[in-house]
Amino acid sequence: MAERKQFSSFFVDDLFFGIEVTKVQEVMGAVYMTPVPLAPPAVRGLMNLRGQIVTSIDLRSRLQLGERPVDQVPVNLILYTDDGCASLLVDGVGEVLEVREDTFEPPPETLQGRLRELIRGAYKLDNRLMHVLDVERTLNITR
Image (cartoon, rainbow, N blue to C red; front, top):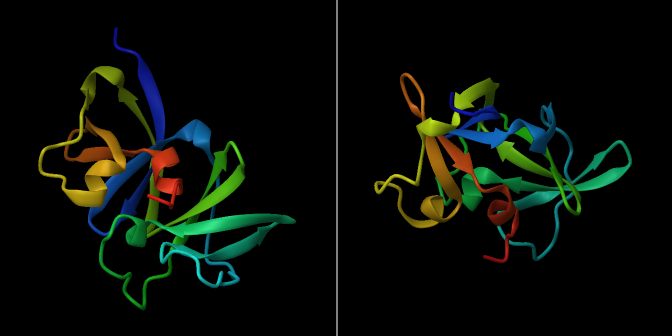
């Protein structure tokens, strides 16, 4: 029997993503962010999470997708990292999904540019692909 893994799912633009559930601390709505002068465009600011300063990365910008519509409020996906916590701004959050390891495939050939660099692969679900985000590469904004 194939091994199973759990992923927290979320949406950015028209793409469906997953991150291992063990890397997700919590999900938060919009919060005040302090801008960081001279930071890369993907860094939307710093937020105070119960006394801890957390860097917020806009995944749309990081993936070089279009700007988020003005009327769409992003969601903060708070992640555990080796350096503390970080936030990914995403368009929406889905549910926790359990997938079989044997449905995993390398990144599809149709993915190009930054998106291809930041995706570890995809799981085939019944009606779509769930792209698995490489969290470490995504948070490394020097690339």
